Image (cartoon, rainbow, N blue to C red; front, side, top):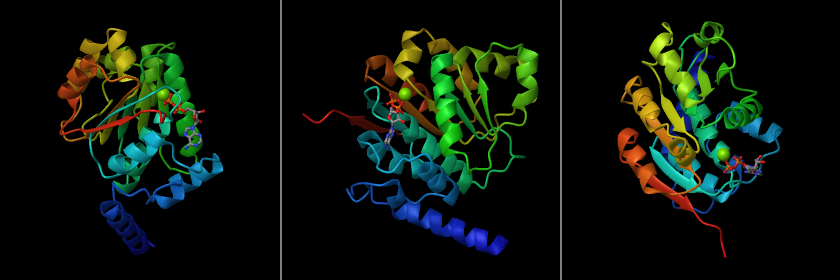
Length: 238
Ligand code: ADP
Ligand code: MG
């Protein structure tokens, strides 16, 4: 069975490597090289066709690129980063014992909760543990559960508090960092918090930055945490 798994994984990796970024043949999620767990989670959640931002960002994300993406509210940015997150962990053969593999930062509690809900839906067939870190409970209570989590969806201030104060929250192995609504994160004055947060993370990681607008401050943020980013921007067709 082990050997079979390794062969499947190699096939998947080959398919991702071969994925043509300029192709318009990717219309449905089933056109993408995905793990069975993610494919089945998407199907069970009734997601079938990719939105424009998903078409532009998901293949790049699967290939492990850093991305700076802008697309308006409602365009489907959540799946555009959650799919690469789940697939990155799958291809790294992440297990419940491997600790924190992915960190997703949202500007507000409400947005973090929404993202977490989508993750629970499309990740329902995936083996990873996921937690929401948005405060509202004592730091200690929250800290107890953090050790076991593979994916965390958090607000900037709260996760920084844990990184500064909670021993045992290991970030050494982190594979992928997502900043969702990066423009709002900046508008809300979290630049220094994000700066400090990134100091806790390993430099070799994938970083995905999503926002509704492209602004100069976003590129400032990008300079801080992205390597050779691919710029993806989707505008509404006239
Ligand atoms: P954004 O973060 O860009 O504002 P969301 O990720 O919140 O957008 O998605 C907006 C809405 O579109 C949600 O209700 C979501 O379920 C839906 N949606 C996202 N992607 C798809 C898709 N590929 N097919 C159908 N509906 C989608
Ligand atoms: Mg969003």
